[in-house]
Image (cartoon, rainbow, N blue to C red):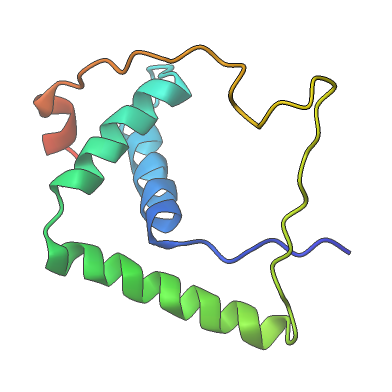
Length: 108
């Protein structure tokens, strides 16, 4: 029986904003990577007080998770590849493109 970890503040924020963006732009098929860039920029633009609300939601999610799954301990499983290299080192570095500020202003 696999138990998922509770979501952190960033994941809760991202999921909510992703839902909002999809609802607002039903006719457009936006790529996941583009949406993530817009949402990440919106996260970075939040003030400490605004982020604290999301951290509070994450804390509540963690408490609820602990109530639902007493004794749960996160134990990551290491993936091994055929070459034995560390995860992600085989990928080429990706260039991050700037996101227009107009895209972010619609989120806040």
